[in-house]
Amino acid sequence: MLPAYIPSPVAAVFGGGKPIDGGKTLGDGRRILGDGKTYRGLLSGIFFGMVVGLLQMYYLSMNSMLFSVELPSFAGNGVNATVVIFALAFGSLFGDMFMSFFKRRLGLKRGAPLPVVDQLDFVFGAWLLTYIIAPGWFTANFTASIIIVLLVLTPVLHLSTNIIGYFIGVKNEPW
Image 1 (cartoon, rainbow, N blue to C red):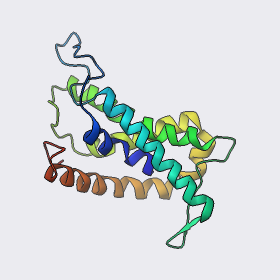
Image 2 (cartoon, one colour):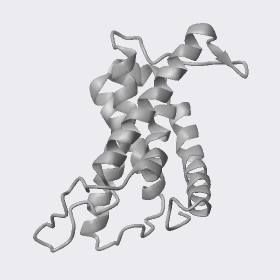
Image 3 (cartoon, rainbow, N blue to C red):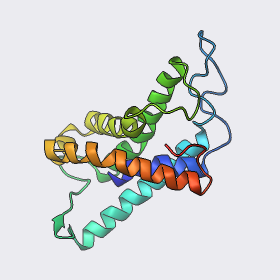
């Protein structure tokens, strides 16, 4: 999941610049995505998600165990590892953008909390795109127990990293 976990915080740190929605609004008068979703954030998030995934692949080439746990490969079931890594990285940012779109429709401003959704939107985006692109790999690696652990662990990690981001000045809110 690291290629899916890394893009959002990286996008927050390296983002800024031209917004993906170009400042456009829909018929409801609300922005499509908002100023927080930028091309620079998207590209830097995907890039660093890919780098982390490739570093994981390099580590796996030398050692398939970490803390006595066998690590899964990104390759297998007839799929290329870089395709899976890209799907996880891009899918996580797509999930975040998708929920930003709906938050704008609900009238929520940038940074307004939407509990549970804010903590898991990127996970569902990563899983959905990865499942679409590599269904065999996804089902082989994301068992029910892994999914449950990630659904419990991710909100804790998300809140922790957001609090850190808030204190170092890259986030306006600690959630």
